[in-house]
Amino acid sequence: MPPSRRVRRSWREAAGRILGSWRVAVAEGSMLPTIAPGDWLLVDPTTRTWPRRGSVVVVREPDTAVLSLKRVVAGPGDTVPFAEGWLRLADDEAWLGADASVETAAAAGFGAPRDSRRYGPVPLDLLVARAWFRYVPWHRLGRLRRRQAVPNRGPVGPGRPAAPRLRR
Amino acid sequence: MSPLTRWLAPRTVVRAHCDLPCGIYDPEQARIEAESTYKIIEKMGANSDPAFTTRAIQIKEERAELVKHHLDVLWHDYFKPEHLEKVPNLHDLFWQATKQASKVKASTEIADAKKLLDMIDEIDAAWKLTGGEEKTRVAGRPA
Image 1: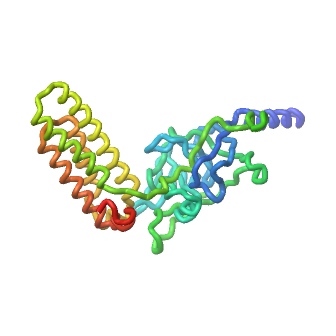
Image 2 (image 1 turned 45 degrees about the horizontal axis):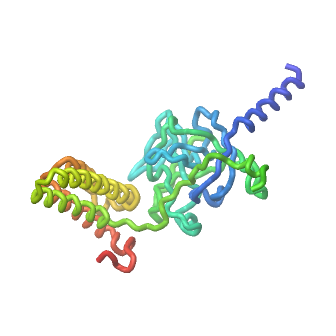
Image 3 (image 1 turned 90 degrees about the vertical axis):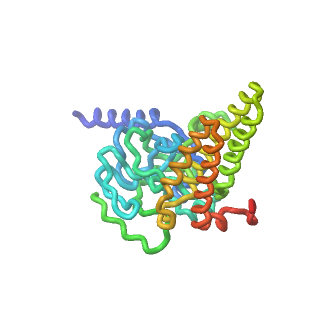
C-alpha cells in the first residue's frame, strides 16, 4: 500500500474514533485525583474485550446497573487478592478498582469508593466502553493515560499481604 | 450555556461510584418497618372488615419489602469483609432474615412477624458487636 493511502486510512480511523465516541460527564469522586466529578470524557464504545491493565473503562456496575467509571486493575487469567486467599479471574472477567482511597474520596465529600472489592470480578458482558480522552476542563485536556494499579484487599489498614506480581 | 458548549455537552452521565457520604446504617430502620408488619397482622386479627383487610394486606406487603431493602443496604454497605471475623455467620443471618421478610410479606401469621423481629434483633447484636452504634449513630439516637 502506498504511504499516502496508509496515511489516509489512519486519518479515517482517527476520525471514526472521535466521531464514533460517546461524550460522557463524570459524577462522583471515586476516580480522584485522576478524573474529577464534572470532567467531560470521550469513551470508545466499540471495545469488545477488556482493555489492557491500567485503562479506564465504563461498565454497568454488577449490583446496581448504574454506568460506572473504573480502572482495570487485573484482567482475564490474573490472580487478585480475595478474602483470605487469592482469586484467579476467568477468561471473561476483570478486576476493577477506584483510583481514590477512602480518605481521598472522603476529603471530596464522598463515601467509600465502590469497586471490585465490593462487587467482585466483573464479566465482559458488563463492559460498555473504554474512556480515552478528556476534553473538559480545557486545562486538563488530553488522553487518559494508562496507570498501573495495584489490586489490594480493600480498606483493612496495615499488615495486608503484598499483591502477587501480575503477568504483563 | 453557549451553543458551542451545548453542542459539546455529554448526554450521558457515568458515575465514579461511591457510597453515600452519610455513613448512617442502623438496623433500627428495618426493625421499625418490621414492627409495622407485626402490628398490622395483629390488627387484622381484630378486624374483619374486608376494606380494612385489603388495605392492611397492601400496607403489610409494602413494609415487608422495605424491611428487605433496609437489610440489604445494611448488608452490602455497612458490613465489611473484616466484620466476618467477629460475626462468622453474618451472611446466613442476612439470608435467613431477608427470606423471613419475604415470608411475612405473604403470610398473615403473627408468629412469622415475631420471628422476623427476633432475626432483626440478632442482626442488631452483630451490628453492635462490630461497633455500629459508635460509628454510625448521631448523638446516640435512636437510643
